[in-house]
Length: 147
Length: 334
Image 1 (cartoon, rainbow over the protein chains, first blue to last red):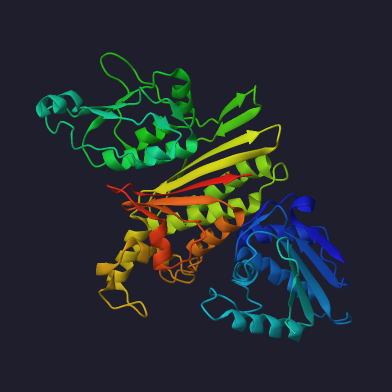
Image 2 (cartoon, rainbow over the protein chains, first blue to last red):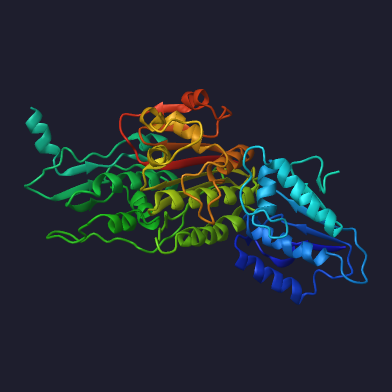
């Protein structure tokens, strides 16, 4: 398992733009994180101010790293530990709005939450990845793909 | 008698004494009594300011600039009699921002008025109670029409650098959520007002009990949420509304619409997703932030548990006699 604690390990207290995320990804790569043979990546945003679009860019990167590679098993897991508003819409906007993997480029409108769930779940299923979103205010994690 | 009163006051604008209190929000600075022709030099009389903090002073500053900006007058600052108050006002850059926005004369035949332009934090420590109060310099969020989110980006770096080390893991407050809320607020202000905005921030810490309170104001020179919604409805069709609905739109109607997720008056610009106001409301509620706003001729309680309905907003709106511009005021106990 690869653990990435954005603030405690990297002293990064803001990921508010794609430039911030690109700089962070460079630092991850310099440290050899994440390692291809790992089955699970845990990213913890505690203490880090993050903004939609930037966060989605980072999640895209981590999911790409977990995608099945030749010679490595599928069924990998991305665990996201986060805080902020615990509303599902807020969590989804923060993590997925602007994601190119999921193709989610516009906000969730009334009644569109199910559509987002489907898009995210289908894409994760296709790539053999499970996402586990742990929020400090929620008793149970959000598990994707939904079963 | 009327003439006598007018003559006595005609070249003075008196500043409210308590610039640490919400009451100063509803004190309107007027220019109607000022001399029109004979004397164009006006004294801004701060002499009786008795209390001040940054969060409230920023809003008073905004009101002053709004009220006095349109005239062709020259202003003279009459400094507070209380020297501690004067130093605070200088350090939080009250006078320097004022002189950026208005034509202030710092030199006349009799005296020179020094204006400090270097922002400094004002820290007061009540040793008996072990309470520390920090007034942050009033922050100007500059609007740049060629780079619309430049001011926001600068602000987000500034607020992060100041608040995060001061509060994170030191107090029982979700500083990340607080900064995200302030960022969203400033982003929203920049997108919609397309003007500079002023932010004031005060933090009180009880160093024994590790509790405290943070208060901030964020106001701009725009037309506010109600005015923005009306302008939008004048030229855009909205599903479910008749084309001339704006004619009878109340401030409660505007707020109900503005706080509906997905509604945006800002078009389909790439970075604007219509998330701003509902996100601000969600974050405020989760933080337990006491959030209110001044808009048009009203004072509104934003964070209250009331529903986003016409009736809900009507309960939370308090009418004022005069438009006070637009600004948020937030207070968070931790």
